[in-house]
Image (cartoon, rainbow, N blue to C red; front, side):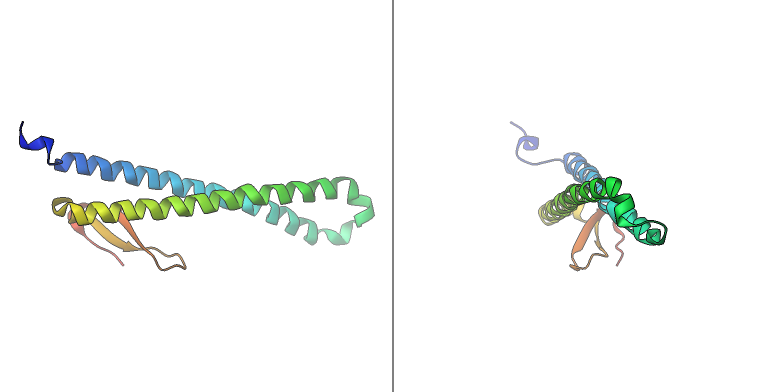
Length: 134
């Protein structure tokens, strides 16, 4: 057999990088959705607090308690989406680091970029031309 059976071509590695980055974008979308689901109950509660001078609890109890229950229920899917998305993003970053270490020809095109999260992790993104940014 020929050498392509044992050695992975650069095109295959580029395609793998593109798939990982598209999955990472999907996880970022999941993080954005989790933020929206989590923020909805907070915005509804802040509106209720802002308008609390115009109603009493006894007058609004018929819709207040179901609304509070719905808000509590919505918090959990938002937290799940956040947790799942952050776990997936870190997994994709580790996969990209492995590709960068394993394939020197492709490593020059995968640049390091610092992410703005509070864990101070380093996030890998695809940088055409090999430029790096901090």
